[in-house]
Length: 343
Image 1: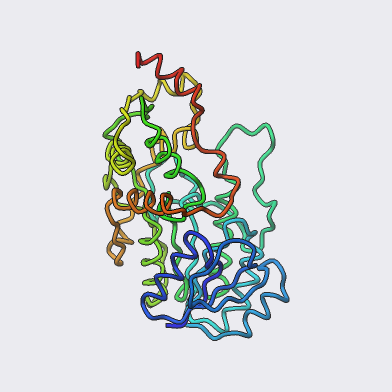
Image 2: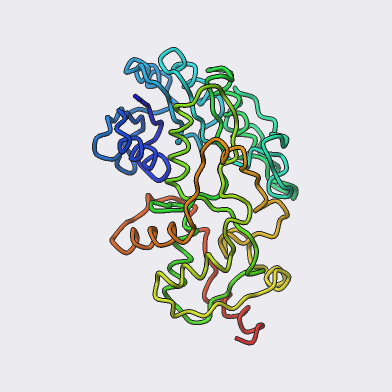
């Protein structure tokens, strides 16, 4: 296979490039060359996806068997559309990495691939779907942008040549968001550790390398489809996840479990202050059966935790990103909640 990775220098894009190289494929990566480094063996093509002349120049480097789009998270649909239109004549397939945020019901409802996808035109600009400052309803802006980008890929390549992948939470070596690294850091510090909600709560994070493998499988597939790319429902629990963090960092901490209502009463921010904690009914009820039937395999979460700790401990550093600073509860606020629990 000869593939083009849009991105290819950090986290998922880098994992896709590396796994493709491991398969013996020929890999090119298109990026701005400003952050991260592509794996050795990748042919890098530098340019900006929002600059039409750069995209036209990129197309001249084809053909490819498939394009895997891992770098559209902050692009407007119209930029995805322009790039896909330029690449459609020189690439066989297009694998677009979207998100479960593209569903109208996320995170309030259990989801499957038949769930309603948000509105979002293929030619929308970056302002489409922005919400008023005083809006207190569901935040659909990001989801509308990604839904529009999905339509951009489908319009350009046609349904039979496109695979849409909708991951939930992706963890693993190279993570730049900071969810798992924060928990590992907190576990290493030890002491009484505020643990959120029900210890038996099922969670569905997926390893970045498993997403990469599935994306490459889709690059080889025939026909088009959309897939939720998460670990199976019930694959792991919050207790198992936090216990794995303690084990790999030395196991000196003590998990103190706080009920959801206590955390909410103390204003603990879901999803960020205690990463992966969310009380919404659909947060960890994403049906990924279709992807599993198509070949998705998910390693144990404990393996992801251990490999991420090894990466961090050996000097691995994530690409700088503003989302990193959003994660983690302050020492003072954690102590305040623990005091209410008598710990």
